[in-house]
Length: 345
Ligand SMILES: Nc1ncnc2c1ncn2[C@@H]1O[C@H](COP(=O)(O)OP(=O)(O)OP(=O)(O)O)[C@@H](O)[C@H]1O
Image 1: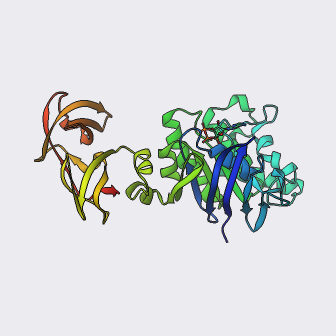
Image 2: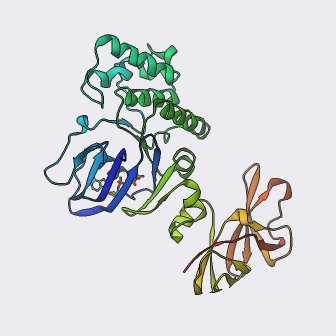
Image 3: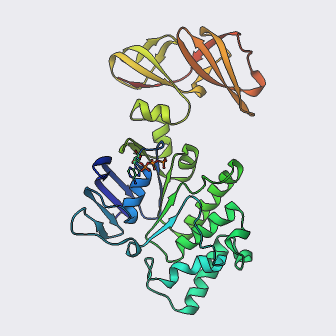
């Protein structure tokens, strides 16, 4: 049994369709991510799961319970056993940290039945411990840092032991360094709590580093779902390939297992013959040996390495090179593609 099963979900605002038949499953105890650009329908999907927006058709099952079938069955948000971690925490400003964490235990809120006072206290204490907030239990939300607020929001979401935790761009309001460290911390907490979670984000690093399954959504459709390695290494469509990470799509003519293009004759993974597009990743491009000649047009220094753009014929191809071996803009370099590339017919 999946923890979450979304089937053929169609959702709209007024008459404008936003989700066009989205299907998705999340296994118990897994962290899954829905990753897509702004306006692709992520928040709408989350709102349907949470029971805040009714779909036009399709169904949502959480745990073993059908919670929405777009017809007679509709379980209201507070009875779905869902814990929500919103973008900015949205803590109750008049409650302490402990008060916020215990809030859902006062309602019939989550998956668990209403615990008694002592059990409630113990649950709050356990969660404060788990999230490293025990020392801050009596603080008010305005006395916390952004990262601390998000941890309180997570502890509050986990308190009623929900069937599913929904994380809605939970790190967006934080600075880059904190985002990275909090990602690892949130993952640790979710695992320790044995929670099933769905993360909605436009940040690919966040999705790829936290989730065991990533579903890529574009214009209200899931283009591909798979492990982070699968979707990066074997993108199902050119859009997935170019949306994830850096890449160049190079037009080529295939004879079956190799294809001829401006970068030479490249090995590829499709059986197709005829016109194809090859997805070339910067880490596959070497500038230190033989190959076709190109001109360096840009060097994007990134500290440990750099992304170098080389113009070969009319194709700007990018190479990731160590920061110790940077070519100058305007230099002529030899460009070689190593290994097999992804091909799209
Ligand atoms: N309340 C609303 N009324 C009408 N249209 C809406 C409403 N909310 C969202 N939309 C539209 O639905 C589409 C999907 O929006 P949604 O917020 O689900 O995307 P998103 O992927 O979450 O975007 P973002 O990452 O920017 O939050 C967009 O075209 C948006 O303009």
